[in-house]
Image (cartoon, rainbow, N blue to C red):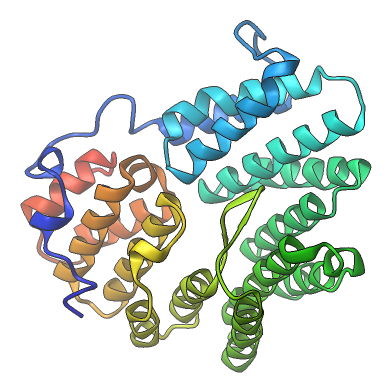
Length: 339
């Protein structure tokens, strides 16, 4: 357990210690991102500064890097511009694919920020554009995002169906290693949905199926539209979340011990690892370890930690449920949570 609950001094760099307040450009990042995406999706806002058509592939790569390194300040500028510029392209296959990938990324960010209404809009556009561009991997990733949104809406049966039908698509099965990895991601998603439904047996069966796919692949597989990729480590990361969701934080911590955080493929995934550990400690009432895990997540990805509604909710709960420390009050202030 000592490996999970890293000391606050080791977890946080010096700029995070003490009381502190959120930097002005960090606290509202979620709101800035949502507003920018909303306006771009509605065709509003100026196109001054938007990238030229020949720049769009490189801009998409940079936007994906921003997401996976949790640089949301940069993403808040880059992604809305990318969507506006993508809509200005001609309706050819390349334009459809690029815009579909932009909307897939927008959906993931909106899900993270718990903006379901805009998330549905982005996910449906991603699906339609992917199907028009006939790109099986983008179609599958759009389906995975739709399944996540359905699960968050409480439509667990529909979420399960969306993920498993997409995973069984013959086109995906014939898409080589990347197609196999995308199948693994979809089955991971279905496992988490089973946990949310209270079906622990189904969750574990689906997790074992995803793990078998990872074993078959023999090593991590990076995916163009999912920088976290697919591997044994990502299967185990989903298991932590699923055990937490199923109400078994002890099992979640046991699953966490099986992962070396450095084996996770992105800053965003490592941040998720530590916030899931914090959630498990929170369920167990182990406040100090919960705070230390949150500080570790903040150290890896401050913009993610400060902007994520689920993390801010956890911090709020800690503030009102027991004694506070200077570390907790500082984290709350930097995250824009009222103390």
